[in-house]
Length: 112
Figure 1 (spheres, one colour):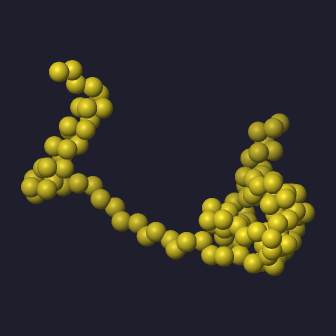
Figure 2: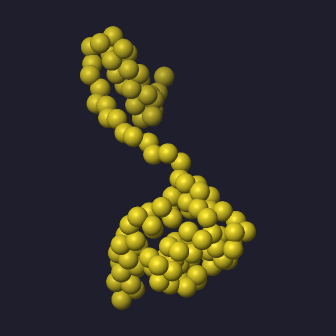
Figure 3: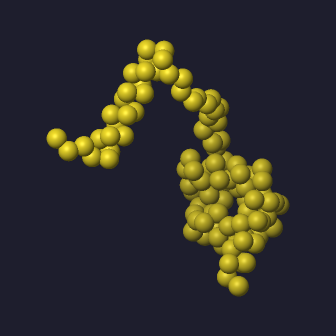
């Protein structure tokens, strides 16, 4: 029977798992803390970040976050709420606005 590369990797991995289970092999482990789900945002909070932290219009803020301007409008009017990933992105925008400034600068540098 021909052994495939994937098959060889699976066999090697299973043998390692058996050796670990028998106490004959140490495995590299790491522990991480998984953050809670992103918090919910009110329309006022979103507008406040845009106006006070970034001092930009809705279309510019939409470009910064890589969403459509209609999305920012809907959030700020309370018609929609940011989903999980978008809510997390807003958390980063609030806590680390400099990150977005650096990304914008990099984008402009690439265009030149």
